[in-house]
Length: 496
Image (tube, rainbow, N blue to C red; front, side, top):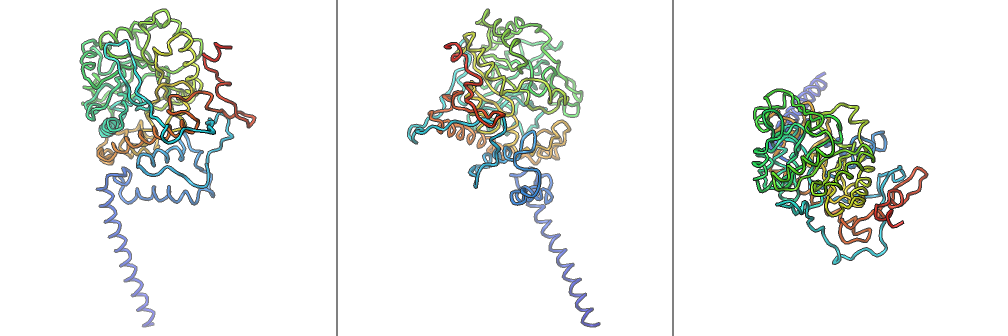
């Protein structure tokens, strides 16, 4: 009994010592996690946040035993998010053993490799492209890949600050979204595209209409390069922006020109526009007041309506937009009714080639630049868009992933665990601007580099020389067909 008692006592002391050691380790990890700046989840959820990284890492070894594979999650799968994460970290983006992508899925884009691609000393980067040559102050845009519209209000203050500083470092533009121009958009000194939504936030008069005085004030800022009239958004065409009242702080209320604490719901269209002539009148007016390029953002619903738009532009070419941003029905948002997210609006995969052909048919190939948007976050997405006819590509959610977004799907609840879409200081402290802006810049730079790599592999020297003939689209019969046969360009059709 004496030996057994001593053994039990020894085990009890050991157990207490182990508990103490674990408690001390947990305390050390708590302090380390709370004060590190790279991982918002660990910063906001010390110790517990480490399990997410552990499970994600172990998933590489155990995923063959479970159903949730690399490419199955929606709206963005693990492979897509992990590519952005590695790019933002500046880590290598090479993988081993083979692709996890199922290339037999209908609609999959496959790039046509060239037998004799350019040599290393024959590569080139894309040159800057002029937008709005007819405006008093045209814009020479340096990058084909840029940050899409995300409002201050929908995004947090540190998120906008990090995007602004990252955009400056990477040499890309930042679209304000429809929530107006905040000091945080300007903080980094990047090029800014000011979006005018249906509620005219930031440039509205007391009645909710457009204020020319405020418009001139915004345009006087030299870093505001262009203005974008938002007609519709991919995730919610036919519905205005939605910002819950708990996100409308005193500062956001001043920036937008609305009451504090009251839900901010934009009209479903610009009230002063009832047809395409009204739209062209507005474009001409904003261009005259600001002196800068003016474009539109829209979701395509049908070829007939889009053709009518270009028909009206052809009758008034001087009033045509300087650019058209095509947002696909797969676009994202912080808040929208599910039927609109799921069911309304043509995919950018169908809309972009259609709009490109109509633009060229009506003689605007050099006058109107096309910007593609809507779930384009990886190099293959962007390369496809350039081949289909886009001059530029913008991404919102790709840059959210670069900030550390984990697709928690809480954008509309003010409880985003990474601090990106919340105004709760508890969560915002996890997003450290000094670290995140570097991730934003690295993501943009790496994506541009890898799109250049795809361009070189198909035999052209730079991405804007990609054409539809460089892409094959997988069909339901298991065979792929050249995109230029499925969706021929206007010039090809005109020659036949």
